[in-house]
Length: 310
Image 1 (cartoon, helix red, strand yellow):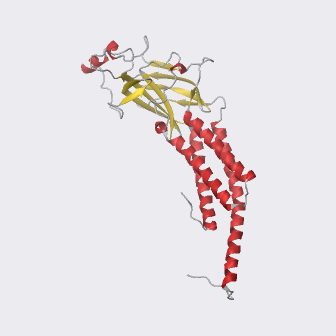
Image 2: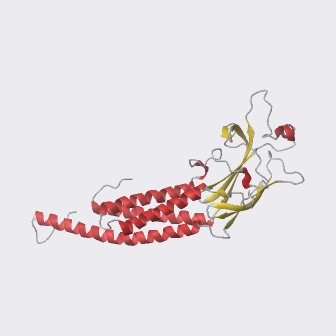
Image 3: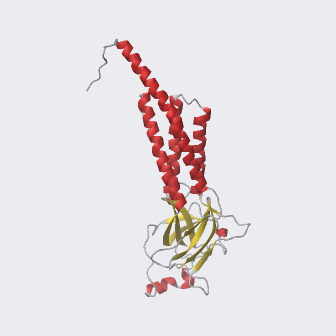
């Protein structure tokens, strides 16, 4: 199908008319993108409000659904865990004397640092950077410069994608692996025992707790250290006699990790997930804004007559 102009006009005049029409369309699109930027700024500010440190914070249940292995809660205020009580019944972690479980209490002493979720800190920084990009695009740069606007939209999209990816990534982010960034044992009162790893991360906008009981690797003939409770409790003997259930296999069986200056293996691993409504709302908003910026970039590239880089 072809289009024709009637009455016919000279070829050069038709080219000029086409260029004038494209210029008019580009000017209209750039003007309309200012409204898009205003909506994006509003959405980003809503995300910042959802992750801001506002009391009393969000109290989230941290409990296994089909067993008594983990029962408790944590309270998140902004990017920090400020309070929590969790009781553990793990096969390879002996309970505290006179108790049926091993308690983990977050310390409330003013001299003790709180547990910071580095992923949420990264997300907050990325959202703030996105807000800066929107402000620069709106107030500082040339709003009628298509190349400038296109570049700013690319930067904005990168930030939104990275923030959303960080909320989804869990333990697999660089610097977020449990053996690379162990929690300060003094966050708890009493302090966390050396044979237990407590690692809290964010995955799919939910808080995910991984608990691991650890045992140092030793050379043949080398006595075990106080890090391991196996010889003190007689747990292996009881297990061989069938007095306790076999410890379930997990995906880190027979793997060796460098943890707090020594090589360890993971004896038992438990994963608990707790959905966080605020984080889920942030991820949904980031996804919607990512789509909006993608549409804006695509439309601008079409009118400019250029290929959009991925």
